[in-house]
Amino acid sequence: MQTFTTARLTLRPWRTEDADAALDIYSRWDVMRFVGVTPRVLEHRDEAAQRVERWNAVDDGTHGVWAVVPRTDAAEGAHLGEGVPVGSILLKPIPASGTGEPPQPSGDTEIGWHFHPEVWGRGYATEAAAAVLAHAFERGLERVVAVTHADNAASQAVCRRIGMTYRGTTQAYYDTTCELFEVTAPTP
Image 1: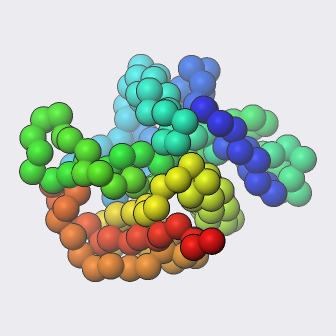
Image 2: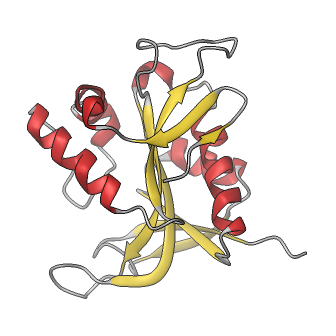
């Protein structure tokens, strides 16, 4: 999986040794309350380790789930420890509603993010998402979507900051009702 560097962040593959950081992020209700049809927090390190394994299986050269790590040379430095991921940025096929188990791809690609509450409000989601969107379009994707819970105003604001357009409410993904945002590749 490709590693990206922005002004303040390194986006790199999650590593097995990052399971504690994943557990710290995904064991928090503030992070998980809008994730999934039936949100639930991680409770054990082995759940986090399994999640890291699944994330790494998403990598196909275009899609992936990256650990977001503040650069130690950036002015803000690391917040939770040097080299420790403070969040995730994902670019993955989004499953279609009504396709059963396991859910089948819709043909669309989703961008999303989850961050530790200690770094909320610092612009990390916007910075990381912009880098991954640029990667998506460089790799030939023509359209990327984001879906949010109706009450997730913070993620909706990130969608708008990275140039996504609100398209209304949809039930096309995840067998639930979501707010849909999309962005298309810039024309040459």
